[in-house]
Amino acid sequence: VQLQASGGGLVQAGGSLRLSCDASGSDSRLHIMGWYRQTPGKQRELIGTVTRGGQFVKGRFTISRDNAEDRTTLQMTSLQPEDTGVYFCSATRYGRSYVYYGQGTLVTVSS
Image (tube, rainbow, N blue to C red; front, side, top):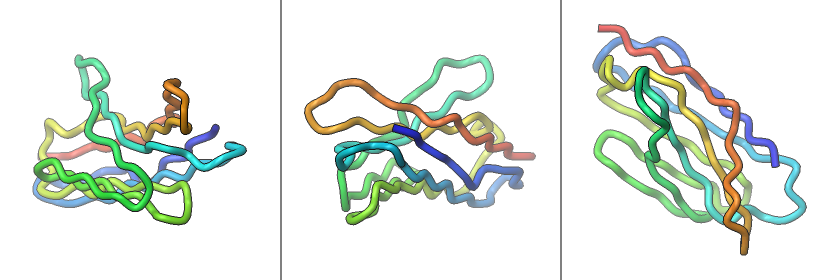
């Protein structure tokens, strides 16, 4: 399974950013998709996960999952400098515990 994340970049504090992730290479539909992030000096942390057609809201972050395709988005609002980091999408297959990660996309929030 290959996960391709996009949408990262530089944004000013208070701004918004939308990340997308498309999966390919799986011979079956993916079960759970989600997002992690790794901020400077910290370990990778889970933001949230969704099943197909679902939505997850955590404060300023909203994760959505396309119902028909293996695609997920992460909408981030009111971004702060402490949100700076590398954001990774993830996926698991039905009946499997192994977690696939994408290569990550860098988000930089300037003050």
